[in-house]
Length: 243
Image (cartoon, rainbow, N blue to C red; front, side, top):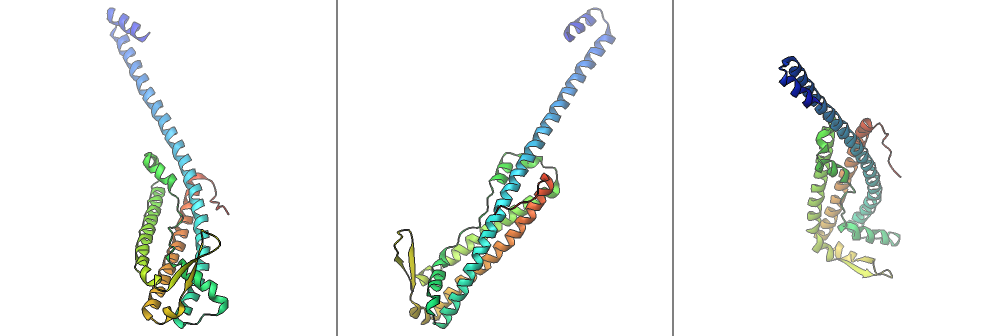
């Protein structure tokens, strides 16, 4: 239709009509681009909103996992405190024998913090992270990712440190089978442990590593709570930690 009018205007040399038709075409193109841009912006905002909701849910799960780890760490550290006292004194009360041996057996179990990052990685890899225009939120997300990376590096460093004591530990700890083929019982030669200060020192250093890393996990829980509350401001949903 527009082409027909333009053709007629050219044939009749109606230059005013030609100019009007060109303006109509240009305006239509500009409006079309604007509508497309608005639609893309709305779609991007919707993607970001959904991603932030998933990220908040993941953060809530991380808080739950970290709190559970901190609770178990409190119990483990209490057992390791008893272990250190027994190792240094060489005296073990019968009622403490099971706790002592369990604490020694757990020294080499040094698992990573229970952190999930799938939602953040998906947001980053899809490029939707760049659609977030709130710089404070971007800074909060970047800071938290830096905290997680630091914790992971510390975990690797502590694990390497613990392996240096493996041979010393194996000199006085023996694993015996139980009725459950998946579980072994640690038997500790306390006399052999007590006769050598080097072995006692190794045990104390391993317990100290667990205590220090436990403090890191407490710190990470606090940082995760702060991030969750910041995300809640964006999503409008309260930060609810699952039991």
